[in-house]
Length: 115
Figure 1 (tube, rainbow, N blue to C red):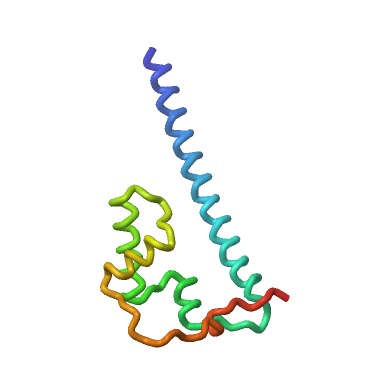
Figure 2 (figure 1 turned 135 degrees about the vertical axis):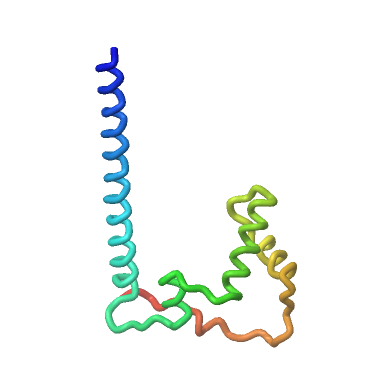
């Protein structure tokens, strides 16, 4: 009976090790695909803005991080995976943001058409 337990335990350990190995391999595949797809979408000769580059590399300003925390708090409190745009505007107003400047053109934020 102790042999069965030993085999069962080693089988569980083998399965756990195999599962961990697959997880590590899977993460590597996702990371490679993510890195390649960002470069491929941008195309040759196109430069990213500093804000876009920082966002893609996972760097955030304090203002962006505070906004992200406010959105996450709202989602947790209201048990909503995705707030509506109206709710996002309410969150922004709750953070203290108000419209104080005249509207500007959205042209600088326009995505370039893929070639």
